[in-house]
Length: 371
Picture 1 (tube, rainbow, N blue to C red):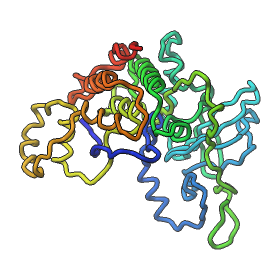
Picture 2: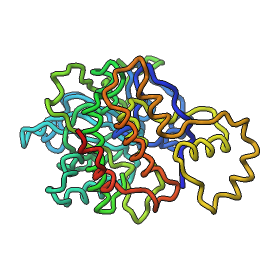
Picture 3: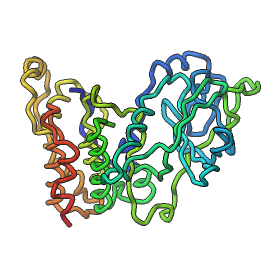
Picture 4: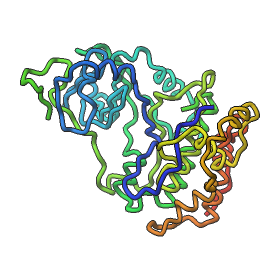
């Protein structure tokens, strides 16, 4: 089993750093290393994708107003960027609708994300999880100065959960009704995936002209600052299938229960910090209220002698209560609600993957129907 090197997160008084829904590309470290070893001739103060990635094999340079695929898609604004792609809001001139165009770096090769999206397009639309998956509308390739790029045309959606919370809610967490609704919708989307075997200003420093492979300017991602820009009946969609997988090769991850914790409390349960393996394993056992599998016991017995004096850690229910019932934040869930959430998360937090409940079991939990 694989578990991130995390410790319990401290109380968060500022903007939350979320990994919900936009959990995001892992770093393409080899690619970044190769680019960073070269001299960087450009500088830009805009908070956007790194300019050194605009090299052969990297990002495609775009301009606002540019049209793609024989004039069909007109680029309007940037939505975001990751290690492997940039994503843009665009107008589909053929169908007169707004879409998102995701353009991969040129050296990606064939992306399994396209295979996942094609599989999703064949899912039954009557399933309650269908509205909570982002769907592909079109795909094409784009030739440019940095190579050939795969392009995905997707449904255009609003801000991610973390940005919405930071922009609209003073307590750095969702209102109880929305947290519960979004948790249920997320599980419905994951259930549909699981039922089909799918898991989830620029200038050169030397004053010379810009090369063709570098854009003439960078664009900050669009932001949703006004409440009226949100739908009256909010809904979530699971986006970005770049890290999704078919179940013939599943990784061992525990993102779903940790995301549920974060939706309810407004912050993740763990925080990356200085940890030793013995402390990490001990905290995992305390938090999950689960025993290590027998096959791990020998290693655990050998390492636990390096533990500091036991100060008595929090269990999951205790930690959830401690964070949620913070005196400085608005409280809407009852203690009974929080206890129910803890039980639900505990059923998903098991060291043995075969003992974890699946998304369909989680979404059927009585807590979601309790008023």
